[in-house]
Image (tube, rainbow, N blue to C red; front, side, top):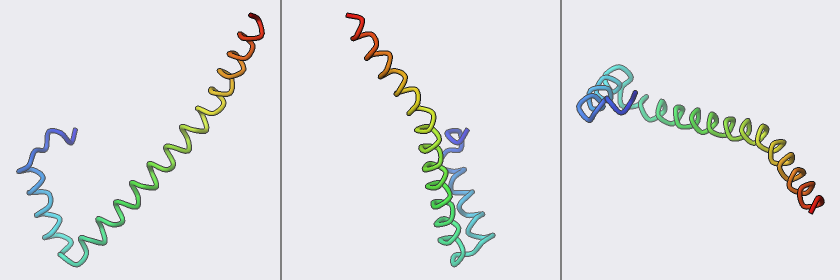
Length: 70
């Protein structure tokens, strides 16, 4: 979706943001967006690990069971 914007579109979006929010507010908005993205990534990692940990435990038990059968 964002790969179709291109450089002219990105410049236009940044210019509009500068006009709408002003030069003083723009860094605050960028910082807030960065923090939000960081929290989203952290939550996604935690959710993924919550699902992956039990799966890995089952795999380890299956491997141990397989070795015991040999």
